[in-house]
Image (cartoon, rainbow over all chains, first blue to last red; front, side, top):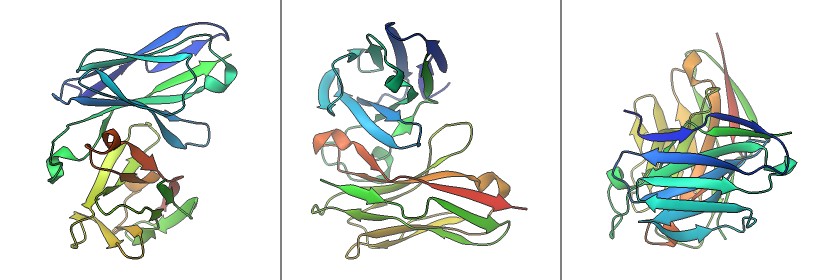
Length: 119
Length: 117
């Protein structure tokens, strides 16, 4: 009954390979995100989707391509992996409300993260 | 652009004591949210507490409370009666409403909290 689930939890791959990370949420949320946590533990937004529509793309190399087949899923595909892509990638989701007031609609729920190591 | 600053890379507290983690932010907006997230060694991001900018009252969740100073753009976290399980990295985060750029979170650099028995 995990709320936001990412697979795999760990991924070790060679430079130049293509890999995907999958994310699924069962909370009924309509906004999903990808965040990257670097080796210094700094977290930064990469992408955001709302109802399968891309709404945030934070200057991420085009080797990274998010795909949202439906509002419960947001996958991240990475082409031609580089050493610098090694990081922890977090998926998150939240619920959109037009007025966006009230506690229950404001927080983001995170997956457990995927540690990507490029060798 | 909004920024979030946590000026304490590391903090330490004795078990059962109280500790305060600092956070300042910079924004020209009036409608936003502030959060503290906890990241234990398991790597899971756990929401500790949230504060809506339009609320003057400081948020409280059990042993966790905040001191929200909107004019000073300060949002500190107080942990009372610290427990060994509180040891973690703590992140302060700023968020616009979801109708404004999708509600992305902007994080501070984090404060690593250790709890001594």
